[in-house]
View 1 (cartoon, rainbow, N blue to C red):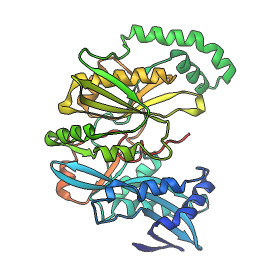
View 2: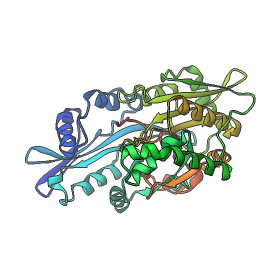
View 3: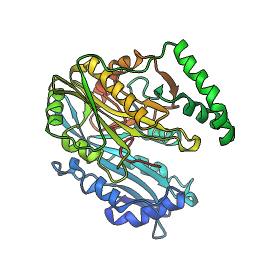
View 4: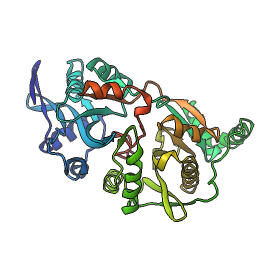
Length: 380
């Protein structure tokens, strides 16, 4: 597509735009982009292997022969009631500071929302400002409850206390010294509230792997899950999982957790390092989890595996964002803490009015950070 704007033009992005987009991101202060990341997202993406529609890799705004706006679009495959659905996942909306106020951001959002070579458009890490534009363009907030409420388990109270003190404005050396009594108070408060550290139920063997070596047993699990699933599920075939968690920026940042019952894979989860560097909080997040038939015991086993893996990594806190109500109910049994992230960061748009009506209810979704770009890239 190509569209004339005031003093500029909007067109489909190509791989040849890498240098210009990288320069734009550098001007904004996002750091240098990587050609290896672009190749991984748009040349090695398994979503393109069996689909001939070839959605654009994004859109750019050009003015005076320079790229001044960009919005990426990563193809992802979904399954919904026996149907294969191609989605375009939003990534990296940016506009040159010198051009803000010209409406280029809104035009890029419209291009994403109304694209015609995918069935579904999703954005899963939306800022409040961009969310306003997306809703104005016709996108909808995710109907899955509590997606914007993060659950957390304190792994190392002193580290959490020090981070909270830094966030409150205490200088780092003072925060470190005060963290000892503050951490003890946090732990005591957890005990008073009845918060428990997750534990593995009887009958399960759990394991942690540092490499995303998803094998045939994951295909078997995915096949069993899709035979009975009624909601929208991002593809979790072994190939898709290897691609998703094998990106060039994710090396060393993910852990694969498995639980087995009688030697057979009952479920898996993936945790990812997402530190809050500004306050020196070491945080791991449970970015994906899949079990068969809503197996509550397997969910509990995987949560426990994630908690213990986080402790082995020296994390201060384990966090969960997303998941449908039946999964969050298992998480809630250990009485985790919670915090509200703000406005819902997950928006969607679909071309079919019939599918839009079906996806307008919470049971239609199994939304986790695996959707969209929330767990595609690791940012220091």
